[in-house]
Image (cartoon, rainbow, N blue to C red; front, side, top):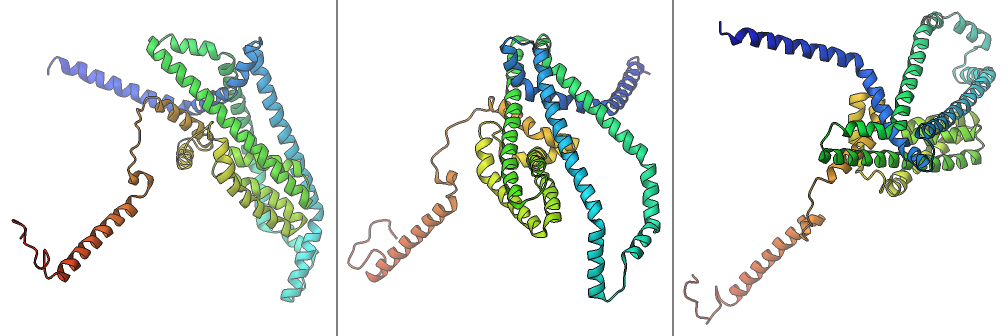
Length: 391
């Protein structure tokens, strides 16, 4: 056996063991890494506000605390307002359920010539096997729901804690990162950090402004139709439609349609039509103007980034995909050399038309020349001496 073979085998086994250990550690820490990534983008989003307050003499820790307090207060107010709306609507639906049931039974009796009564229907529902199984499964699933809620609260607390430290100690974090890099790399890292702050803050600003405009527009519609809980529904539509990519519009419009349906079924149709029309106005008129200077990426690239982010990290990836791609595009754009575009018509999409026109013109000229030669009695014309070599 060669002398180097045992050492090579030990080295290979060691590398394999390190790879397995790293894979296991990554699988165990993937949740924490995703939380840290979300916290980092959240810190980038509030970085302009914190830096502006720190420039006026306030400590960064206090500035970050005030910004997070405002965000938490607004979120808690929205949840309380929406929860009270849903609770009140559920109470109204429960109180009106006997009337709905009576109307349904009367319609069935009139159209199908049956003799159903509400008491018989209620007894059959209360003593049905599927209802008892559903109640038993719900009772056994209470512990799972409680565990999920507690896990979500702990994850939210972790995200806010990391994002607070990132925002409060942003300069210290940048100094620690630059201290292990050469000066040339330090400038690139600081520039990438600045671009990420601008793009993430711009994305949040543009989406917040579009959410405000969408909420005001839907609030006016709901007030005109007389739909209850118009403020809460308008806030719901504005936030969900803007901050949940791709399917946010449909999720946002479902709740107002349901509430409007309880008032008048035709009101739900009006709400649906307004949601569709406003979405087209937002996509083709409002969004390009608001995001042209903040998150200037092609709609196809934005849609593809959302799909890729969802495939990689689920809903979290869908939320942070657009600012991440905008940051990467802006950073790489500084290292791509661009040239002036030629005035060739094919650049402007007129390639086929110009080419077709040229071919047609050549064909017409050749046919015209052939006709003139034939009229004059052959090639070159009658009485015209043939040039040397023109056979």
